[in-house]
Length: 246
Image 1 (tube, rainbow, N blue to C red):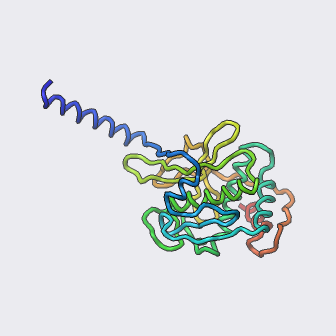
Image 2 (tube, helix red, strand yellow; image 1 turned 180 degrees about the vertical axis):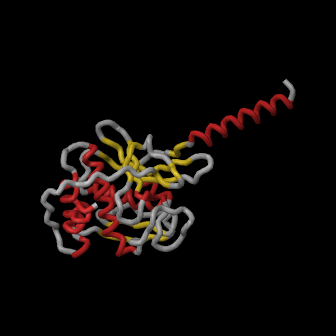
Image 3 (cartoon, rainbow, N blue to C red; image 1 turned 135 degrees about the vertical axis):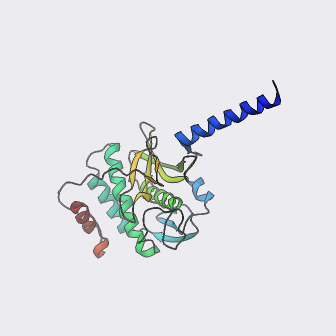
């Protein structure tokens, strides 16, 4: 075989591989515990109920926030209120509301309350990109897990999904204990305090830089639980009132 023929066939094979990548996309999943993600971005994992809140693109700015005992009590009530049945699906629905609640609680104290949907090209203080979102959501999920509020899932390391012509997009990940199925918890699909998209990681994909967001099922108009503390517009009663009006 001539050198020209060999080079031609090699170039042709490379073109086929590149075309396949461009059409199909790919997933980058390093594996391992969630702590490895924090180490990669030089952010501290949760210590007790104290978390590091990332913002300004890629955890370039970090603030600490501690959830109080009253916060954890409110989250426990919220999880039980939304989790109407003891099933993994019901728990994932509750996780969505809990993450949104935690974002609303943290936002005013860390300057991230006005965060918009995840934007990769903005480096402004208080704005979160997908790395910030995935890191913070993982912290929120670990707080829930460490307080015994996750029965059917455990938190694993975030991973990203991309295609040849698109930027990587990160999301937090949880694994269903019984089946081993992995679900993406993508809090970058909306502004601060809105429910994240939670879907099978195998169905999670990039669409103009954001994951597809599934509709949020409304809660029933059952009795509103009494919040563990009185913090005005931040308390659980106000949150449930907002949920019921959606």
